[in-house]
Amino acid sequence: MEAVRDVFVTGGTGYVGQRLVVSLLERGHRVRVLSRAASATRVPPGALAVIGDALDPSSYADALITGETLVHLVGTPHPSPAKAAEFRRVDLPSIDAAVNASVRASIGHLVYVSVAHPAPVMHAYLDVRTAGEALIEQARLTATILRPWYVLGPGHWWPLALLPVYGVMSLVPSMRDGAQRLGLVTIRQMVGALVNAVEHPPAAGTQRVVDVPAIRRGLSLAAPT
Image (cartoon, rainbow, N blue to C red):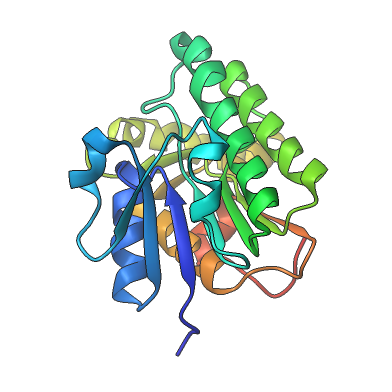
């Protein structure tokens, strides 16, 4: 049986976040969810809502517990090239706030959902997410960085139409790496990888990167990378 952990989740009322919170609770972990007052009713039963602003580290840093795990899931829903301004307004400031709050509270482990890269599209989104990774590295936090490309699930099925394209790419040696790096993962695989990251943190002071193939196979945690 895994050790019971204290887990603080930002973005815990969203597409991935609600499912993650439920899974963590089912596995016996103590979970708190950062939420705006208007969204507190969307926090899954069993988790404690912490009212605060994901863009303002001072609004929740004092609620963090030294040594705990912070899972950062705040981000613009349904990312597209048209949302570049929103990426800069929400996604980047929120991870900056999470890093600052984590340092202030001396948390034990930060779990961050970034994005697979390099990629030929979504440049603004990639720039913001890789900037988030850089903030984590600069702060020397113990961290797991997951890099999915697209997470399939309810309301998020349209990329299935691209499966024939992925099939062709996987057959071409020069394109095979890209097809694997930018592959699709299911919501179940994503939540499973996040739970595994929470339960098996990397060595103190290291940052571990988990790519699409690792998310699909259940997240290999043999050693930090």
